Amino acid sequence: MDGCLTLAAKTLADSMSSGVTTSAFIEETRKKLAKEVEEHFRAIAELRRRMNAIIPVARLPPEILGHIFLWYITVMATHRDPGYYRDSYHRWLTVTHVCHRWREIGLCTPNLWTDIRIGQGSVERVQAFISRAKHAPLQIHASNDCADIKWLPALHLIASELGHVETLNLNVPLGTLKTLTDNIPSSAPLLRLLTIAGSSYYGSTPLTLPVFLTSACSTPRLEELKVVGYNLSWLDSILPQSLTHLAVTLAGSSQETQCSDVVTVIHALSCLKHLELNRVLAPLQTTITRLPPISLSVSLPNLTCIILLGSPLVCVHFLDHCVIPASARISLNFQSSCTPHVIPLIMPAISTKLSTRIIQDDKEPVETLSIRCGSVAFVKRSLGPIQNRTHAHLSILAPGYLVEDGSMLAGLCGLPIRDVSVLLLREVSYNPSARPAWLALFQVVVKIAALSISSEPPYPSDIIAMLRTRLEGGEAQKGKLIMPNLRHLLLQEVRFRDINDDENDSFVADLCAAFKARRKGRRKLEKLSIKKCVNMNQDDVTKLQKVVDVIWDGEVEYDEEDEDEDEDEYREFMEEDDSSDPLEDVYYRRRNYF
Image (cartoon, rainbow, N blue to C red; front, side, top):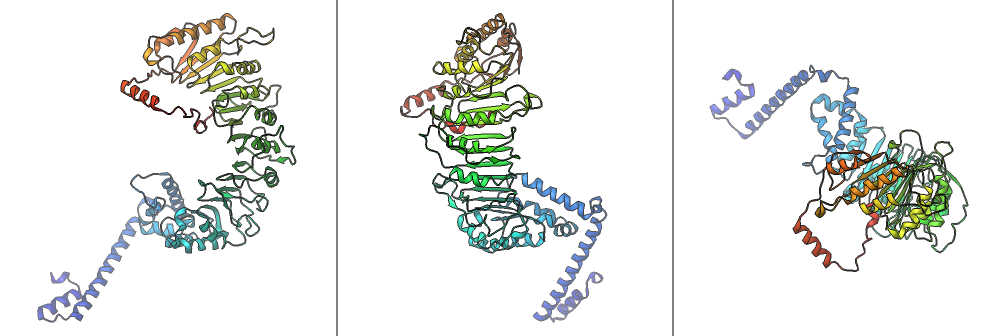
């Protein structure tokens, strides 16, 4: 037993046996023992390092292991852990605690420490990240949480390091933004992505953007700029010509900018690929009889997407200034309805943009026309299979029912759509009040080969009425069926019958009769596709197969009948106020065109 004791332990044991146990003596002995314990721990740690050094992963060069750590950070950034609520981004730091070598490699890999979150963790962590990143380009993300005064040193540090910042995302209150921008240097040579979002975005008054995009701070490499909630002083700001993406969103309409001012600034940004202006353009007078003349043409040869949100007249007026590639995607999101007075004013500019060809042939450019209750979209003819061309080259969205009164349908007739081969209808009724406008449209789009009908409306009665409709024009067309070249009909999410009338086969019978009539008139329908339809089964398919080739997804789905639920819905309906607007909130229910 004595042979296993250290000198300090033996001395302590001898002293206790002889009765010499003063406090000073005991304390000194404890220190000696603690030192010996530390030496043993260091020896154990060294042995573990030597053990780790002989495993396969230890043979990886430090550079390779550093890249693996970077991929681990990327994976952890997209992984959601339901049990990890606070400071979830910094979970990747545990990889530096695995062993001594991994920590040394982690600390010596600057790119691991470049993504800095102000508002998460602590100020000391921000300082440590910046120190370990050395001179590597930084990605800074500041959230509303950094409004606390404790983050002031971190904000000052970020401002001083702006020369090394590549991405700066500031979703902060105005006071915090001023703290940062009041201390910025005269140049941010590496800055490529800048996002400034104000907390007043959901308020009514836009904030005034502090002096950031002016001569006070040069940003020669800035490529992407996104401003949300702040009022961008267009004529006073210096937007670098290097910009490829520009998105500006105002919270309200109190500080909208004249269209001519925005045009003047955009004119110098010929490298733009993406342009988005939401509530930026001041509306034009609704009483005008024509759009103002174009004062300055804006050439944007690299543009791939333009999104405009505002009043119909000013959005189209701005678009009319822009000379863009034929393949660019245009999204017009109107905040007010397209009235019968407005539609004739905006159609000439829309026609101009649709008339530019992607493929140089003798056909009109538009190949696919999509009509929904609150939107109209156009797809141009281009290379590749038609089923792969699902992105609209021009789309119009407006609140309310865009095509119900027929005004928009009538406006479509003057567009370059005579060679449209695909027509998509969703949530659009074929009602009698708009029938003349529909007939006028079908007299233009006579080359439709494929018709897709989805959801309700159109109802089964609308579908049958459309298939039976005959033209009423001149003698050459009078009495002929519309869509004479129709070869393929797709029914998707259509309800074949009411759940309480499961024996009613009228829709299937009427479809068969309509197909027979078209075949008799030498307008044979070659294929009927049925997808995700409701209240139908194999028997219906069998009947249809006698007159047309049917492609069915095999899904059999019936509405669930719940008498108690029906009674509750009926009671709620009877108790509703008669003044409720059935068109309310329609605008926010239509985002996908195809």
